[in-house]
Length: 592
Ligand code: GLU
Image (cartoon, rainbow, N blue to C red; front, side, top):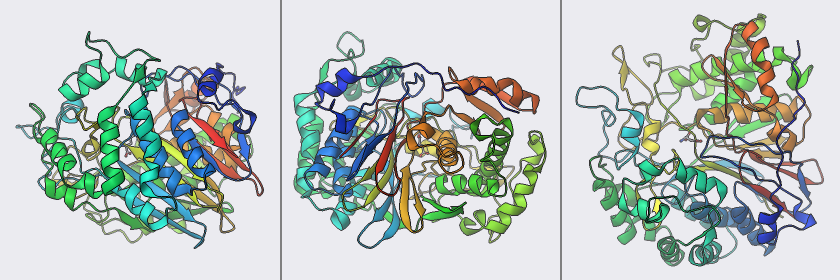
């Protein structure tokens, strides 16, 4: 069976924006931006892939891509560019990521021909206990009651990740990489349509804490209009201190004290972050989690992220099936992808959390024999029933005494991919969790609400939940920064924001590339169909809607909704680099 899939979309090009940045020249090719509301609305424009021969960056904001491009142009490497990009994103896209958040980096080091990952995830403060998100009656708090304030703030990891990986792999002086963001913060940047919409949709919550309100909201209570110049002198000062003092200037001293004061003094919802939590924060280098899919090795971030394991399970469950035939028009293919995803999410909910704290069958979850056996569940012709979608029994499982989890994730976050002239590759997903994080701001940056990625409930029927809060633990993530290898060489870097739908966005884009032969931009443009827990989400305003009736006929519930990914990816075709930026956001690809 096939459904209409013509890819007709709304179209808009922001040449004016690129021209303002001095970027509207052919080497950069054109990228489009279009109206987008805060992590929700999805206006899609047609885009074509950008090609280059030496280096490339794809990120969610033109200023950030430009900062990274400039670093690469003056001889910096991918890690140098990563630092500049992240610091600019923290200024111009403050709702999504920044100094007060956490990140995962998947990195290919060309010198050593080595793939590795760095975990800069936020951690639960030492004083956080499993009942952090329960009320006095022992019931889970309402999501936003937990989010807004100090309670949800984990020890931030991004600054340490930037600093330590730059120390290990960077080339240009650390302090020079702060400059683009410092200049932009001092001179002011134009409030983008996306930032304006994000503020407009969140006025009430942004108004709770004084420092946050006075930065994001004008004196008359309205959001700063789109296009006005916004300066952030406090952010510039913070970066100057980090430029001089490295990450110590952030994790100790006055900035650290200000974070602790802001968290502990956050009105009627204080948190427990302490100076010792900041002083002892460490990033963790971890081996990549990889699965072989067709002739490729798909590698990404293991626990505490569920990203690479769940993307890997989806691909592993699909491996026995020919899904090249029929392409994205095939309803059968979407049945297979949707039910593979539901099975993977069932294992995710039971087993996946911070494996430094709970026993996890990490190897077993991607065991080929286990996945081949489980994929037989997909042999039928109709949707699996709810009863059929239960967690499996992966080998090396020491986690039998765990209950299914109850975490809530709402999408924010940002992903960027970078390739430098030496062949180093950065695939980084970076977050403060919810849009504007905890809404608590200090020294020009927002603090994350990452702790709400833990399960609020601690037990189910007396059985502990793997992703419960524990002191020093890292909340389970869905972030899926990925590097795909082919014959031992990097083939693609990709990732996305989108809460736990990240997993579906990334898995589908990989399938579109590997099975359906699309280039990176076509794969990103493809309308989204995502199934995590049974309901098939179909991307509103796109041809994905035409799958509603055929999928319902197979037994799925469907929901037509905005699916606001932010896929930013780069691929190699042997000689050239090709980059794609998600038309659902404001990003651009720049290369040379
Ligand atoms: N906090 C989420 C996670 O780590 C990411 C949220 C998002 O992408 O929107 O999985």
